[in-house]
Length: 121
Image 1: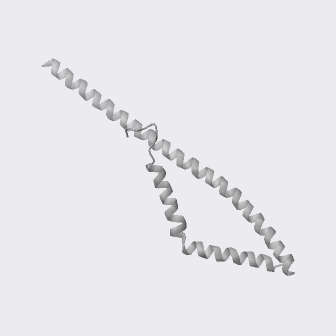
Image 2: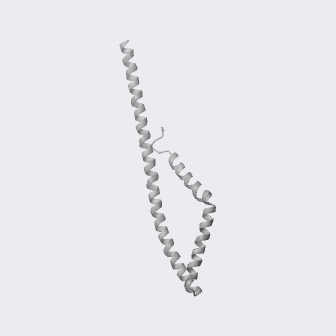
Image 3: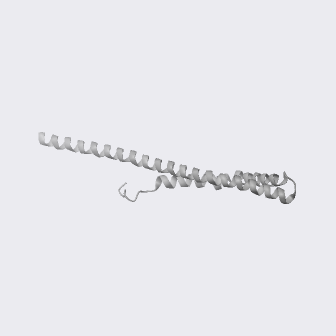
């Protein structure tokens, strides 16, 4: 009877160890995916910042060139501002299709992506 009890106790110890290991593995996988998403967001933010700086200086240069071409100092800046207003309205109208859904899908894809090394989970 004692031998049977020892086997049962050993089995429960193994089950507890297995469950603890799975919980720990899940925590590590969540931490890995979270850090991957955060690092990608930081990289995208840095690239977007440089693109934004390029866009700002390019817009100023383009507005200045338009102003010189038209001959009125304010006209080029108004034209560039109007172009940005038009683009802003278009993006606002189509924000779900062009912004919200692609971003949500990219995050979901990243969360569901399986690791090459982790085939059993």
